[in-house]
Length: 86
Image 1 (tube, rainbow, N blue to C red):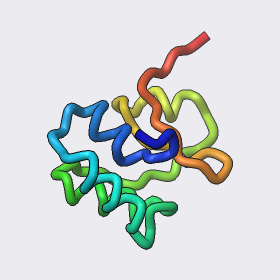
Image 2 (spheres, one colour):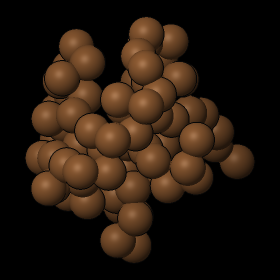
Image 3 (cartoon, one colour):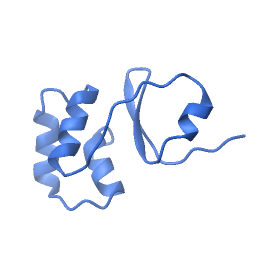
Image 4 (cartoon, one colour):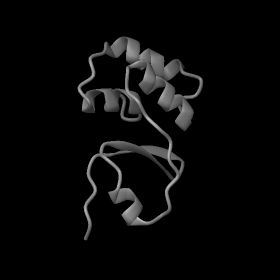
């Protein structure tokens, strides 16, 4: 699996059944793989519901979310699987 293929990472994390060849090609050829709407559309294709949220930069806002979730941080998508407070 390519390190930057967020679709395959999420499918594996959520134990969604898929074929790697098709999913990799679907991701690589998707015209909007680098924006939130495109990622949301790809997840929907696999039966995963998602929604876009804009949160304040406060840790309290993050603690209200159910993990895992995808976040957009400094121009990159990341998958958050755990939130811990100090």
